[in-house]
Length: 110
Length: 113
Image 1 (tube, rainbow over the protein chains, first blue to last red):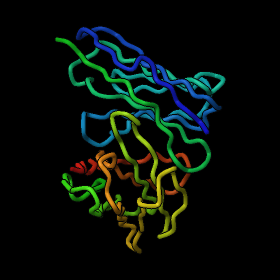
Image 2: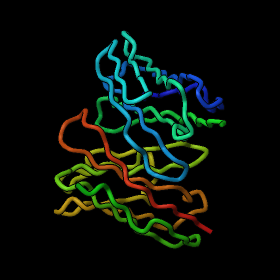
Image 3: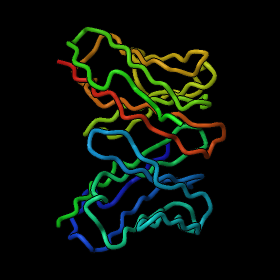
Image 4: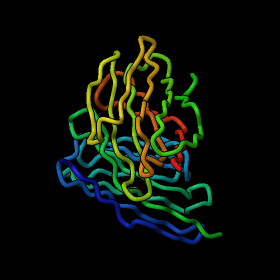
């Protein structure tokens, strides 16, 4: 079965700094989603990547799916307190169900 | 368009009891998936329903069951509750198409005492 590993598991950055979260798959990714979750709440969809090399941006968040389609990175530029939360990557393994990474907990210090 | 709604938001039960959670998908969405989230195991897939039929199932014991109604609303039932069933239960709905994003509800926080 497909597994997703996220790194780092937790991250503390100073407000205004850039940061990167990685998501590595044990198998080829057919689709890769990034979600954000505030503690104890539902998941908020950020973006979806499908094609190798694809890169998408939303406000100050950019995500990229590498050419071999087994890794994705999420980059936040000039972090703000509103970026704090848990970031999860999810993969569609071709069986219509989402497999998730364990999440990266992001803390932004003012 | 209203988002995915889940009821109740919080629930406290004791071991051995059973519980039913409800999920109303986004209007027009026929696929509803359920997930369990715990600190130790993370987010794990329970099952997916599409047009009242279970289309996919995760690796959970038979105590976990679900169903979907003709209006796409879904319920999840857990019988003979165990302490380890304490978790945030999330449901998500999706439009047709494998690569459509899933929209998640706020979750039901279940505590088993």
